[in-house]
Image (cartoon, rainbow, N blue to C red; front, top):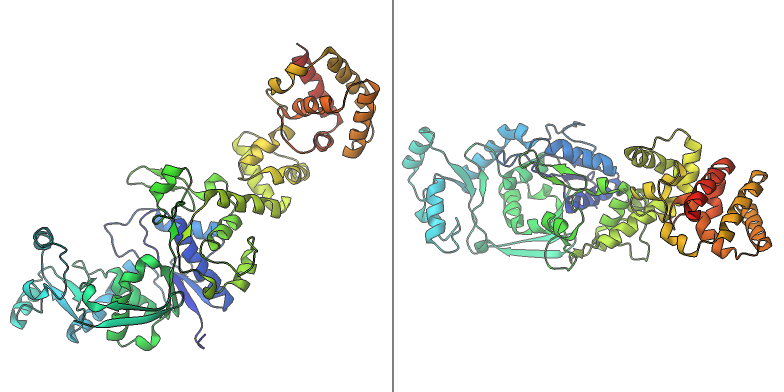
Length: 506
């Protein structure tokens, strides 16, 4: 590590929902920054106004807030290098693009979209670069006088980088080691568009320099852009200040073939976005992990394990543990297959791990959504502790605990009726009378007395426990039946037994 303060950034485009791969990039940035007491910056790359979607920036900020990965500097938090939206930095970029033109590293290109489309149709694998630039309308092929005339006439134009011939560009990736590119394979990318907006290639270099970014982590799909960015750092005279780069492995489809996409999630029945995203342009709602019932702690935990491990068998990590243990040398070069069943396992483990107090607001919301308002907080905490080991997603708390707050509306009659006898009717009537006199509702005492009473009546306790459970719960599920009775209390337990016996005896 250098002596410079670590500064990392996440620079999304506000064009739609936040893919779990994007959140993992945020997480790796965040962990690295916090491990070295550095700063995590959010910069909005909204230079492509044709793709801008209303509400997308707020959505990104909400996602980071839900995950607990809030930036130190951002369009909302501000900071010493504001503004943090590239559209608000538009005036900065032209001077750097013009500097590159003056020094022979870039050039003006006056080709119309129609002319370029014609070339793409007529020339197989057409690229705007060394092979064709001399025959196109640009400041390389035209005379200085012609160029001046076109500029004076405010002819629409872009500025393109001039990729060198027969060169090789190499850098050391923090995950992959030495990476090398032949410049002949790279086209002359547009740096400044006709509307004066920079493309990603120019803006990311200028902003990383001006914001003093020390490390740049991004998905491996950006690797092909690396030679352009490397050359820009060099051409602008900033090579000594270039951040160290790490290109993160892809998150793959469950079968391992190709990058996981929104379509894959829709096809296979699981979310790929952090939170629900409603697209105002299409009216389409894409589901998210939060609304499905994932805890943010579990979401981060499952993401970090897609491409990283600490070298041990440990799989459950708090954010604090991850900050302490995270290192890029444990990040894999290979893509990581997404496994939704494993993702749910992480959530179930985190539900078990968290205290009833921390789960209570979320469980309250789940129950309220189903019409159950909880007034007794202490009772709710006891219920959560009894059922949380049985829940995988937060909505499971409704099914696993609703009967603690209201009597069953219906019973799993098929589980009881086939083996129901008059002797069982008599037993439960007598048991209700016995229960009226009980003073100790502790589960162990209740169970002991129940079994003793069953023996006294000549019925196997095992034949009575399932009916008792269905009476109290409505079905064949839930924690230990006498734990349920204790929490319900004597009067409620008696009420439920009497109501259910009437149903089973008919």
